[in-house]
Length: 313
Image (tube, rainbow, N blue to C red):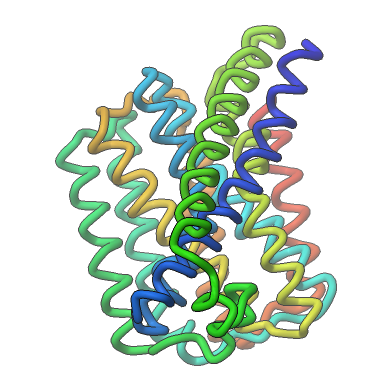
């Protein structure tokens, strides 16, 4: 059992640093090539935080672990909504600005509902995966056109434009390759350890994916949100979760389904309904009262505890 736990822990470390390396290398190359701030800020930053989920779910789908592929996406979205936002709101109340309410949240809700309806029958085919992928692609393009680049893009990327331009293509390429390699190794560690623990404790793969694996792949979102809250940047804290959930359903689940059809009957209705209800709750809080209070944050964290207990019954 210790070996499986170490594999999960090592997998989480590999996913975290792999996503960070991939993001830094890709944004540096994008800056040197003269890509717009909107493309770098929206697309690459969002892809960087969703890379762990993508590698784990795609790897699980290829190996025939459909419950883990789908459970990782659904579980990550629940973790983002309940733990990430709940923890952030406990530190400071999170205000939700108009751009998120009017543009980004509705897109997230639409993708979440699509994911629910595609997974409720326990199977995600290639055509459904393609629909999710194209929906996410169109959503990102529309958000970039309507909202423009985030005002603090350089802070979000963790590097300045001048630093990026001074770095060589060779070093940036090595960062990208190193990040991908760490993501592959980390994903394999998480999948192998998760399946092993599920066999030892006699629980379905889906339960491990919905809890342990999803928290591991959610580390970049947790870190980004805590850092944003520390800067008292509510817009980035909430926007990071909304964008990540949108891409998890559209990009991660969509691409995984396109690579290999997913049989996800073990995920069940409880996680899917929890994901939908928490998404709708966030939309409700966005309009009434327009922020996530500490009380609401505590309720979100408590909901994850109840959800986990119900899963393990």
